Amino acid sequence: MTFNNGVKSTFTAEGMECAATLFGADDKGRQAPAILMIHGWGGTQLVLFKDFIRRFNDAGYAVMTFDYPGWGASPGIPRNRINPWERVRVADAALAHLKSMDRIDEDRIVIWGTSFGGGHAIDLAAEHPEVAGVVAHVPMLNGLAAVAAVPFMRMLRFSLDIALDLINPFKRRYIPIVSDEGGYSTMDRDGAGRLRDWVDEELNGKYDNRVTAASLLTMGPYQPGRNLSRITIPGLIVGALHDTVAPFDEVKVRRKAGENFTIITIEGNHFDPYLQPWFEENVSNQLAFLKRVLG
Image 1 (cartoon, one colour):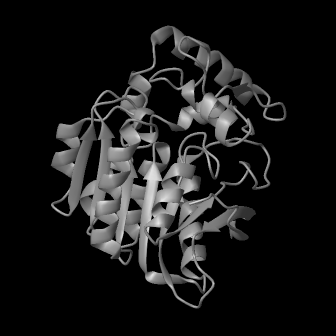
Image 2 (image 1 turned 90 degrees about the vertical axis):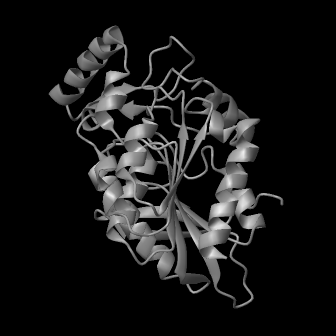
């Protein structure tokens, strides 16, 4: 299908107006099954999502994306600040917004989250047993493991920027989100630099590649994997076995997840499943899960 701009809307969360876009719901009075897509650490509505949206729409599913306050098309100051617990509350408000739409079948909704947002999807699914299912795509389930994967010298440089950010909250200190390997950013591993190439090609280079330094302090304490055992709805977890951005411990995940979860692993790193040649098998597995829980 040809990618379209979708239908724009807004919802309120954390006292702020948040931008949302609905893709794929028709205007013929039929209520469509839907997917709420929750993006990750530095993502905005379409970053690395366009191919997934196309394929989900082609299969008959509406898709809603949204921007957290202070990110992308959503207003808010400071820009590009991350607090995962606030983000889960924003995602909760986004879910309520999607359910309220006339063209959406509120009984057939799947929560879909990727990377850092994969953790948010797990948190949200634990609180919403009424939804049809949850997909956690290369999810960040253990913040301490993600922090431990950061090289020591990089951590020292992060610490300096965090301190400078905290000292003067009126002049925020920013760190690049992604860079080529060896560059200074929150993600330079696992071929993260490919994200910039994708943005140049798919979004005409429109991406604010920065995050407040103090956001890094929230990573370690965030442990969404603890909620896996609370989820009673069907779930799919897609883990990358060579992921060093959001390390995936398959043994621990299988031990914590219930029998309602399907766990699929990919021989790749954190960014591989978004891109070819890994994307095709990845999205096919997800479509099979969606057909099972949404029809």
